Every structure is written in C-alpha cells, then in structure tokens.
Image 1 (cartoon, rainbow, N blue to C red):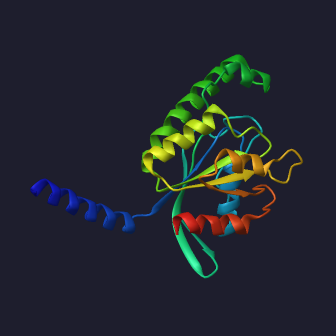
Image 2 (image 1 turned 30 degrees about the vertical axis):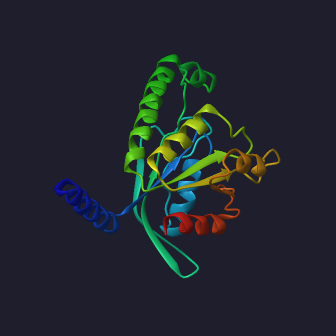
Image 3 (image 1 turned 90 degrees about the vertical axis):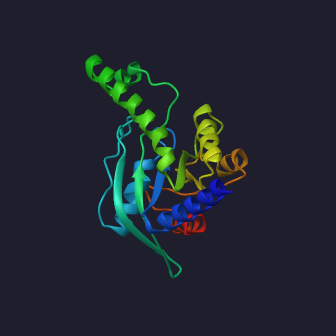
Length: 210
C-alpha cells in the first residue's frame, strides 16, 4: 500500500513538473528530409533568425541543436517549447558516400565518425522528448527500415507524433503513400523551403502538443 501511495505521489509530482518545464519538441527523420529547413522555417517565423545551416550533403547536422523558448500562435492559442533539431537517423553511414560528395578521404572519415555519433545522440535524446515531429521526404519511399524503426521507438515510449511529408511541392511527392504507411498518425504535406501549407502544420502541432 505504501509503495502504491509513493508511486501515485511521484506520478503527481512528475506531472506537475512536466507542466512547469519547457516542452521539448524534437525534429526527427532520415538525413536530407528537411529537418533543419523546417527548423529554420519555424525559427524565422517566430524568432526572425535561423536554427542552423542547411546543405545538400547528408548528415550536415551532426550535433543536437536546440533553440529555446519559441512561442507560436495559431487561432488564438499559444504554444511555447524548446525546439530540438536532431541529426538524421540512418542504419548505415559510409565514409565513401562523403567522398562522392567531393570530400577528401580524411575529411570523409571524420564526417562519417561525427555522423555516427550524431545518430546515437538522436536516439538517446528520444527519452527527453515530449513531442516529436517526424520529417520525411515526400518524394521517397516511406517504408524504410529507418522510418519504421523510428516510429516503433516512439510508439514504445508513448510520445505524441506528427508526421510531416516535406518537399510536397515536388512532382514526385506522394502524400497518400506516406499516409498509407503510417495511418496511426496525422500526416501533413508541406514545403519547408517555400512555406507551403505551413499554417496547417502549426495547427497540427497544436493538436498534438497544445
């Protein structure tokens, strides 16, 4: 009985603390899906500044980036959070892929090492997240091992998820395929680069985190 009471008190205290602390909103997904582009869009919209650098080379974001105290508004509501941009999650990182991008071997090996550490850090940080936005490239197959593993990890942790099908402005984009892959989640098609459908994205964010 005492243990049950302790457990209940701890849960109440945890919930109180959770309400007081800043909400951690994580951007997750495979490399080059547009996580940092979306992070920059959010930061530009509400802070007037960028989150980080964007590149066509995969694994450009190799460290966790955090922008604190972002407040967004939609339809009379306000939501405050710390935005966490994570390195792209991948099952295999090959330094030769960086060589193909024009890097020298030594630099490519160092980049691969940093990218591998970034993936490990991304997974570790899942335990810190209150809400997660999975950013997928709408022109690519959503049924990859990386995406399925990531979704499984989030379901196991019971973390609220919003899926963003980015690059939906491109001809090859297939929003219906993304929706069919993950019917348990709300999927919103956007272009983080051009800001297409971004208001609907913010509304979706309020629906799961507000």
